Image (tube, rainbow, N blue to C red; front, side, top):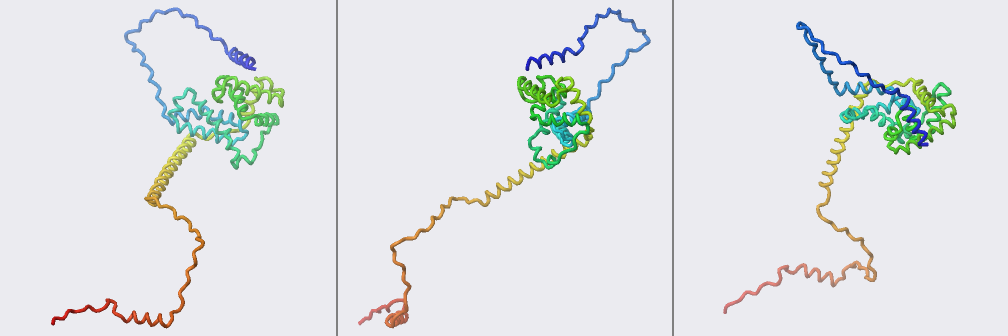
Length: 312
């Protein structure tokens, strides 16, 4: 299987016209300029683009194609458009990193594919309602065949036979080794050829994928709209982080204020003691007890009178 893909890679490179070495031109003697003519002024250096202008140029160049490619992965027009917009919003938030990247389009494409193939998409209410299929029966059959593939096999097939990446680039973007990407690609081709034998030829498969993506009317939003959406999301996350931090600080302060400052041992539960007679309540007093109580109340509380000495 790897040998077949290697031969196909070699055929792709062989289709490119060989570069011809330019013949050396005969040296010409420098012409002497007349004394009255002035030397031409050098052209001014191109003006550097602002970040917003560079982002708008990248979006206008790659967004329509990315929406069509994402549609091949999901089969849903609105989800494809939302995935590409979310990827570009993330790119705008990290624009210094994306602008210095070797392949900015590949950076955005990988982010869009990851968002489109996220397993959380199936839990969204939009996913419960199917979208109308393509009008052409052939396109409808091909799209259903693609959606039956596992997500990793589908992504590998779209990158290699749809986008036109070579095998190492496909493996790098899918975060897999080259043999693993080759096996996924071959299994995906076998599954497609099993239902559509006419697409067993890779060239025919590439052409049909391009036609399927082009037949759908998929439009992307305007670049300023995407930039403003990304900025709103960034502000919302910043405010949410600030609110969470304030709530955490308030909760910590309240806990420190109301928490006990010393250890209080828990009170052990009471237990019944057996063998102790119960205390009997006193009854009414007898006549003698009443007489004694009255006598005690009439006596002086300070004790007997003191004896005074007499002289005589």
